[in-house]
Structures are given as structure tokens and as C-alpha cells.
Image 1 (cartoon, rainbow, N blue to C red):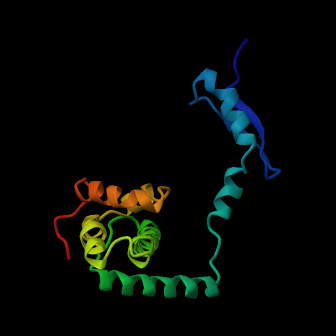
Image 2 (image 1 turned 135 degrees about the vertical axis):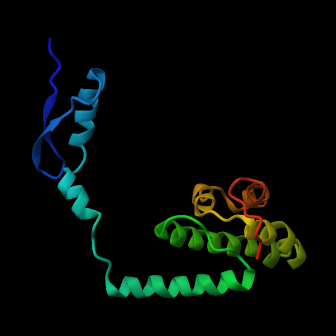
Length: 162
């Protein structure tokens, strides 16, 4: 039996299209075709990714970034490397993590400001990549003192501490 090279795909969006799967290994074609059927067609997928952001949401994002910038300057944090989208996301993540750690350790009086400066802010200042903050976002706050110490010694660190 010959395994077809082109498949008629009925996409989840309702569109149908003949797709050339000759570049896929023979044993992968049926599974890939089934996977495609659970997705929107390429045109619908592409159009969903280019949605316009409302002016109101743009204003909210700009205000949030201004607040993040103020906190970064106050804490002496470095700019982060990465794409524009990564930087925006990682800067917000970093702000949220540091604020959460401050509440967890200093506000609760478990540790003092000097400990927070030495164990949290100093290594956080050394982490220069957006990727690090994004990759570690799923960890709970109690894991971050150890994560920050390791991150400050990794390839994600910068010697140019502010």
C-alpha cells in the first residue's frame, strides 16, 4: 500500500486544504495530518496572531512599563537582553518576583533589608537575559534565592553590574 504524500485536511476553523506532507517521514504523516485537523488553517492561524491591541490596553502596558522602569532604577537592575517582547515580559516577571520575595522575606520579618540586598538584589542585578526570568517563572518564590545565586554564576549573568 502506498502512503499518500498529500492529504486533504479539514481544519478546526472549518477550512479545508490539500497539504503536501512529502517532507515528513512516512510513519509521521498520518499523525501529523490528524494533528493539523485539530488546528486552524495557516491563514486563520496567521490572522489571529496579528490582532490589533486596543488603545486602552496599549496605554495600560505603557503605564506598567513606566512603573517597572522606576522599580528597576530604584533597585539598580540591568537592562535585559532578548527580543522586545521577551524584554517586556521578563521585566514584568522580574518585578513581580522581586516584589513577592520582598513580601515573603522582609515584610514578614523572616529576614532584614541587608539580607534581601545581598541574597536577592545583588544576584538579580547580575542576571542579564530575559530568557532566565522567563525560563524560571514557574518556580515558587521560596526557590528563588537558590535560583538567583545559580543564575548569577551562569551564562545568563553579566559582569557589568550597575
